[in-house]
Image (cartoon, rainbow, N blue to C red; front, top):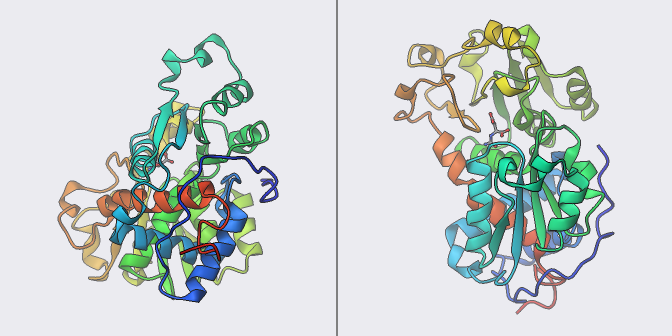
Length: 351
Ligand code: NCD
């Protein structure tokens, strides 16, 4: 996937105040400033855009915001975020909306496809060109892989990929990494990623981002839902320390720090019969967990169908609701990095 060169699309997107949550030391401020220099007013399309240092800077900033959201409450007063969701969404859409409002801004929402001009045959390129005239940044979810890259070529305001078909979902990855860091740590991590690895965009984004860390990744799926070969190739290209594929959870479960469970993406199957062959293939319940470590953290991007039994929800293992809640501070941090003016973040102009 091709990303635009950072900084090529400078546009005036409101004037947030120049003050800033003082980072605890100059090093943090410097890292944040340099990431902001690269991210501001640019598009966010793929987790491949971020190095380990970038990820740590984003997660640290999200943690600061989570500790004291009032410190950034009016930073983006007057800023409007355009929401373009061509596929169903609850968490991603509502947490972007919450994040923008908690930064003092607001949203304009295209609404459902049924009630928009898409229904009349409008192209994606035309839709984003129109809405960039109304909003300071766009968040796009679309069923076609590559759609975010394509759409970003038609607009000057920052465009955030909120899921492009079976492609990528980079902001979900940031909140996933945040949750992993909080629960298990990102160093010396052994993670199992299970379910629909073929069509699951959260998996593709997360697996790539984890190659920045010392993470052993175990992929568990039926053969027909294995990771696409090009994703495996990409992971190996990053010299990831341990990438292994399995068709059963049993052998690997005891060694896992984190188990990331995903929904079988029924809507992406070209043939319903193929879906039926794998539906309900992997389910986690109390019996399954007898072989797991007491410290195992279970995650899921949600929505779940039947992959995780409700009896797990009340156990110490369950981190998926916390994971969804982390979407707000993480998206606040990302929106601020994308939308703040020069020197507003960690720069010399700070007070
Ligand atoms: C995921 C998505 O849309 O890719 N959900 C989300 O954003 N939290 C996962 C899914 O739909 O299964």
